[in-house]
Image 1: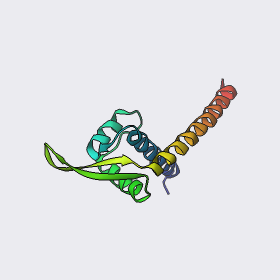
Image 2: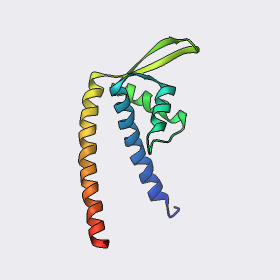
Image 3: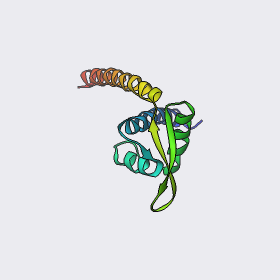
Length: 119
């Protein structure tokens, strides 16, 4: 196993949870079609991604009942699939955001401790 493999695996796992949370937060604000959602997510720091990554995540969130979709006609091509957060998705989002804040507080405390030791 390459020396940096554990770090790569860790980054992948963190990014997966982070992406779920970002998607749900965006859909909690308004509905999006896939491509537009990708463009919005790319604007955020740390959310750089390839377009193809988001569709399996949306499919999984839909399978989990957190997101729903509806196809609507488009003026510029084929119908677009718009995604919306569900009632269960909003409940999960509230819980996920609270957990994220708790983790951020704990991480900030850990980082501050490291700075005290080295500073």
